[in-house]
Image 1 (cartoon, rainbow, N blue to C red):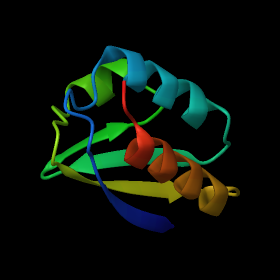
Image 2 (image 1 turned 30 degrees about the horizontal axis):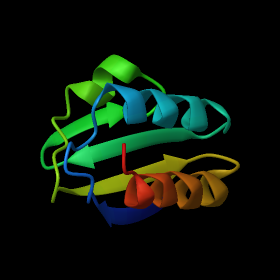
Image 3 (image 1 turned 180 degrees about the vertical axis):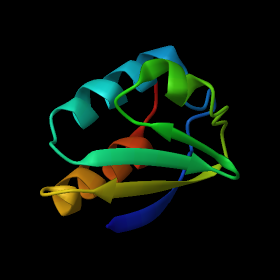
Image 4 (image 1 turned 60 degrees about the vertical axis):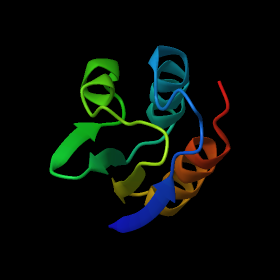
Length: 86
């Protein structure tokens, strides 16, 4: 298991468009990926679960990946979240 924390800088937080891109990115990896916002967790391959996390600007999110390509997945997803501007 690999975990990384990332702070969300997008003024709109994680809304539908970037969440959809995140789901598409996560589906490209074999590992299971979970985003954690406080006590809430959501599978990164499920758009509805991501939207229910209520990730806003300034939120620190934990990305947790478990599986064969966990390192690459965690790096790619945290990079996408950190650079998100849409």
